[in-house]
Length: 346
Image 1 (tube, rainbow, N blue to C red):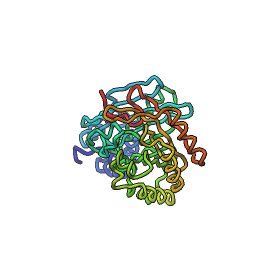
Image 2 (image 1 turned 90 degrees about the vertical axis):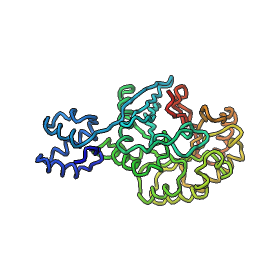
Image 3 (image 1 turned 60 degrees about the vertical axis):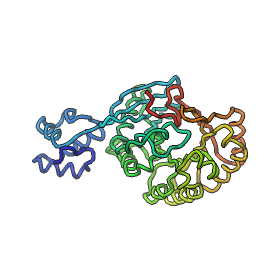
Image 4 (image 1 turned 60 degrees about the horizontal axis):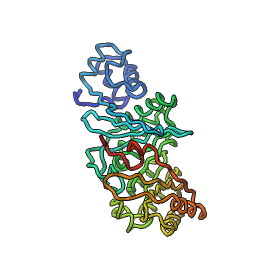
């Protein structure tokens, strides 16, 4: 057995085969599987219902890398931001967001990001690598433990809205969600999971082909290609028309809920003309909701938040035109945990 093999990258069948080669009973594989995915053991020594000899052999044949919490910050509004350290000493952030009716984990899918969105702190970082599916799973486990400790409740929702573009780490994100929703994993409903994308049309269609069961959110943030090109370079190869077609394809294949995300930037995309263009896009896609998001300032960008009256006028204009829109207030701004602010600051 390779000494550099991550045991969590084996299937249950492969574990069973391994146990047979060791002369162990087949049920030992199920015990190890439970320690890995339900009891969240981060060492072989923790697997106390296995013999010492088997634990020693497992430790010799496999590695069990896991995320650890390197730093925690708590906001005045109850939001908790964690910096996680990977086994190879990279850092990635995740956030616990409490609300009256839900406790949400905002998780990351990449260490850094390659998309360079102008308004996002992560976009100014170098992308180091994709997170593996077991690392994404660890994020959820650790944030759930914080939820239980701080609020005496399990997580109710998960959003892939942290660092990185989930659809550029497609296989790991889908495998992580498979483990999160599996009965022998965290057993969460896929309907309580939302994957947010900056807009990779081909991969949105792939989600449809794979008939995923989770929700999808598109970070739109501008209503024409000229403006979107300025703030989201990915639009040059995935324009709004291509994204509209991809969203329609996704919905035809899955029937899953779609949300449009729209950050308001002062004097850039907050006019009633922009609102009218947003209405046209909304009518072309099977979206349930437009989330209007408060802009959160970052060090590298010069954008500003519009005045409250202008925000209200924008949302009211959408409502008058039968667009289901709501304002999503920022949480955790004082600890750089709000939308667009994750950047591994010390």
